[in-house]
Length: 184
Image (cartoon, rainbow, N blue to C red; front, side, top):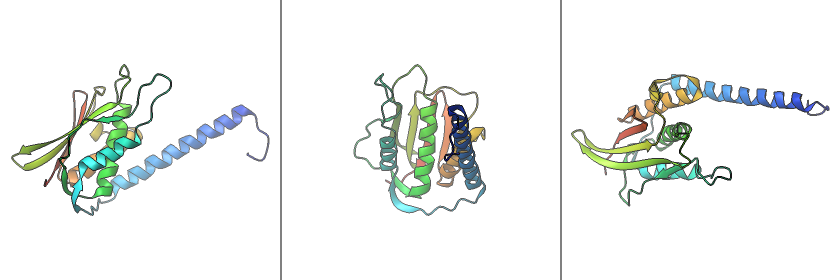
């Protein structure tokens, strides 16, 4: 089609079809990843805080002319590491998927970044890193247990990765929460 002259509306239709096929291929790839056994390559001393700061940096583009941001804003935790035995690649992909969905779930009336807080807690089971994405719409379903659409598949895969690292995920009152066991 590129070699011949085509009407603009035909080219727009073809472009939309290609974009739809790309999304479908991406979703199918994610579904295949979910169906495979998860093999983690854990490494000691992987800092969740560093991973989240790198992810937040990729979301730092401002929106149109209104000056708002569609990104993530990390609450300052300080220099305390949230390190544990994690597979850095798998964990980063899971946290990126959760962050991407959180940005999409941002309350429409708020024209600011999604606030991400990170803290440590001492629980009966040991030290835990808690990561929370705040200011989100309340959904009628658990986004970590949904397979509706590409985002649902990615969130389900992210939950699987977090749980395989010994952590947990939840959605409650406009907050997405991840808990991960840490060693320091």
